[in-house]
Length: 103
Image (cartoon, rainbow, N blue to C red; front, top):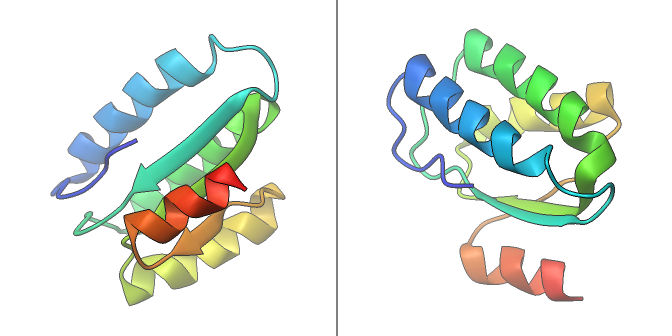
């Protein structure tokens, strides 16, 4: 999923909806997901959108990683992981995020 350079909550929400349409059509625990969050807009509304997104995707995701988060986004992201019970690993760059998925 590519949230990079999404500049508004509406842009982020649109990407979430497109991702939901794909992910939730897949067999359970079959999706390996990598998410680019470089330069993504982040506020409390986006946090809430991601909360519902992550919870709803849990039955479909086999393994997941993200990269490119800012400091504030990373703090909020870590909180979301605790709330949703998801194990999504965060990395500084795409190469490390991809390598994690291939292990």
